[in-house]
Length: 412
Image 1: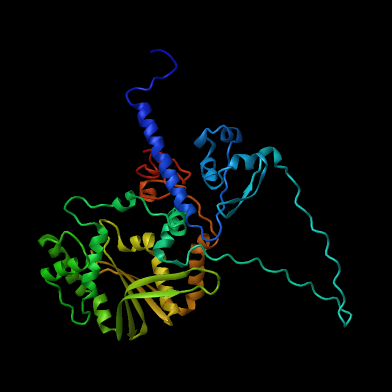
Image 2: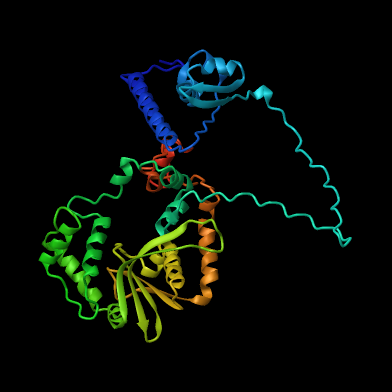
């Protein structure tokens, strides 16, 4: 008491040691998963304090201090010799060591002036041969969807960890957004609503009875089965959509396809991932001729206006869907977002083939960071963005206190 020091009370030290051990195990698991993704060559790079490394103090020298010896048991001797090529169990390993005192700042080399071009047989100087173009890197992912573009916009580094490295999401992601007791999650509610609308005849819409809803839930593997109150809510939802002009418009179409998958490339910027997705409904209309795309939304709107929700959350989806139809040969496209809580007020945007280049330019701008491998960490970490991220607490530069706070504008 009254002193400037501190005493660890209760089980503080034991709990701290347990926490550090758990973090170390998790760190090693993440490194193991990352390293075993290598197909042909694995490059390990890291900074270590040599004096700590050589005394065998272990993890305090940095992750490379325990990863590298697992590959080269005689690493200490190799480091003392300044690195080199070694054979370990028939595997060729190259060890390169660079100490701070060995780093020398140098001026960039200046290429000598090129000799004058030799004259051609006609006496005129020949033009310099064009410099070879640098090889194009393959895109880090093979496909992009509107949802993956949204993930990249929220946090490029999480996109990299999950989509490029293939690291599995943590349990917090699977538990995020769990419904309150007695309520079905928003995702499951959307699956069930889509299943009912997928079987709706747009020309002669018949509202499904309660037993049909229970059967649809069973086919989708949704448990528990919907009760009377939920069935009544879904019946009302389908009935309201069936009475809308949008449903009648689909009924007048010459052809309507459900859950139509698409894939198209952006020829203006190869190499580029394919853009993929699936349309809830795509219909061909004749009067006037065009294509109608309908996307059902089961979001709970509350006091929000549908147009505002589309502008905030589904602008990229609308762009991708319009381009999918235009690449499929459509000259005129209407993309309708239908919120099932208010189906009588769909948000419809029209596009024409004359806009294709401008729309592609927008999509290229949205995906440029992925193609150029710019995977920046989010500047606003919080639970909504970071929950379940495989990089959280280890690979990510943000501390857990930031990634687990309630929102980006709060301390906790």
